[in-house]
Length: 135
Image 1 (cartoon, rainbow, N blue to C red):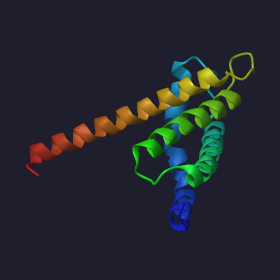
Image 2 (cartoon, rainbow, N blue to C red):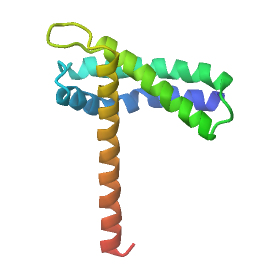
Image 3 (cartoon, rainbow, N blue to C red):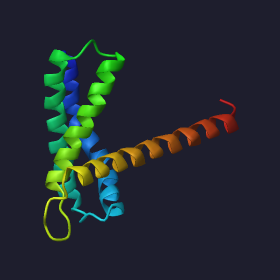
Image 4 (cartoon, rainbow, N blue to C red):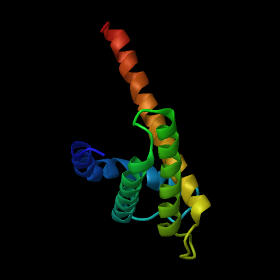
């Protein structure tokens, strides 16, 4: 990885974690996992982001050039594995036990789907407003 991209990732990491917190909390609520507080969820997303950052540093040494299909697939699989493990380990059920890898992966995928749905809804609204205003 280049130094510039590493610095950009470190600077944007807390901001992107702040954006991700409501989606993780909503995903945990939908899947009937004990919903952590906002601060605890923020720390959880920061920890998961740090783990993914380290995984990307290691993977960048062995991956093909950035932008290839193989690099994209490996990065997506690494994200599912890392975030699923972190969420599964740190999120707990009503008995105080870790929810496990599979349920953690479900929370991650649901949070990602909710975030993607919001982005699509915003894009539809922006395009609709642009068409109404004739932009």
